[in-house]
Amino acid sequence: MPPARQHVDVALIYETLSKSEQTTNPLAITWLTLIGFYIAPSESIEADGIAQAVLLDVRNGYTYGYASTMVEDAAATLSTTINSSNAAEEVVDKAKLAAALALTKEVGEMARDLRLELAEKRAAQAKVRKEPN
Image (cartoon, rainbow, N blue to C red; front, side, top):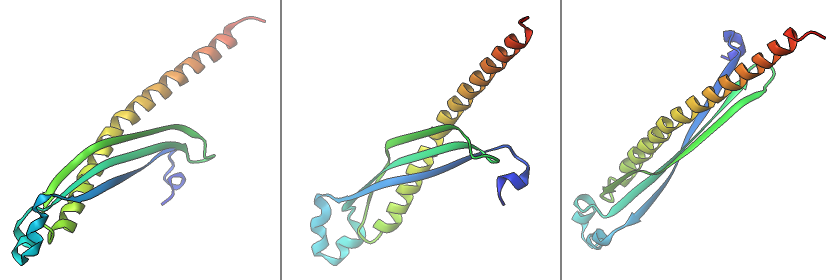
């Protein structure tokens, strides 16, 4: 349901992404045997997490602020060849979670800066109203 129908003035829209890389290690030689696919941790999986957010006015689309973060080497693991897709999913999920957690700090700083800016504007408007012409 759209935010305007929920009677909110602003919405924080965010997304998390990841960039993963799978590489083989020297244990890949075990691929020559069938059992090596199942027991030898021959693949290294690493992922970076990326998150970004935007604070929007839902009525007019005005952007109040933007925050983003990137967590390099957020998650890593060793995996067997047979289990590599499941392991890659887990690493990607961990990287996205790490990026989302880092984004909360950035969003908090963005909100603090917006609050200070709003207070300064209100103080300036109040000063203008009080000054005699």
